[in-house]
Image 1 (cartoon, rainbow, N blue to C red):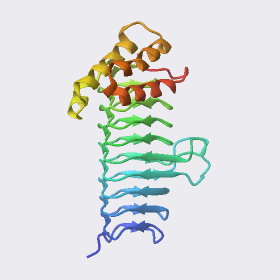
Image 2: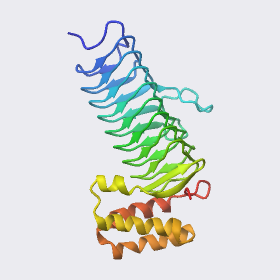
Image 3: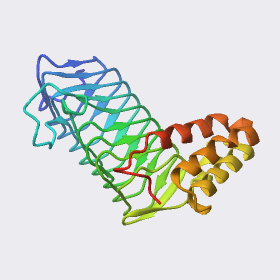
Image 4: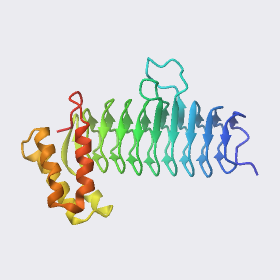
Length: 264
């Protein structure tokens, strides 16, 4: 029995694995590729140069790969790439990239994307992230692994969000959010570190102690960003087990620009 509903419109040039399920009234364009085991519900539109991995689930009314909302876009063949085992809920909209931004919007693996989430052009989202309802990314946003965005979180263009960080309901991120940070507010301010999330992911007490020390250097000691960076790098000697965490934070801070800064 065919896994494509007879009312769906799938362009003959589209490349769908034989195990892909397509629901009623869904439209799939000619430059779309979908790997094995992915399920696409009814009334979805998948167009543009869109590549989708294995075992994803897209709920009804999802729009993928449409032209971006950048006025400079002139129809160039930019891409949207989605990895494996992602769940994308109703009315989510993910756009292709722009030539100026590298030509690619990408989402990794094992992400849980709730209703009305939006990835604008040239966004790069990592793995194991959770975006609650109406989490919205403007263009060129970079999101690390294991990030949680609370409902109605909005993210300014070119902002970076570090791994294991978390935003509260209705937060507006206008600056970079370093790894491990929990933020809240409009504009968002750092409130703490995501300690409970880290414990659930198996972080040891020593690693969590190092992250507490990083939070203190960034937000409690009254240091400049440069002074905090130097203090954070030195934490490797006190907490050798946390060396990868310290290195990740140091690398993130080294890429912060004066135009964006970090959330304080």
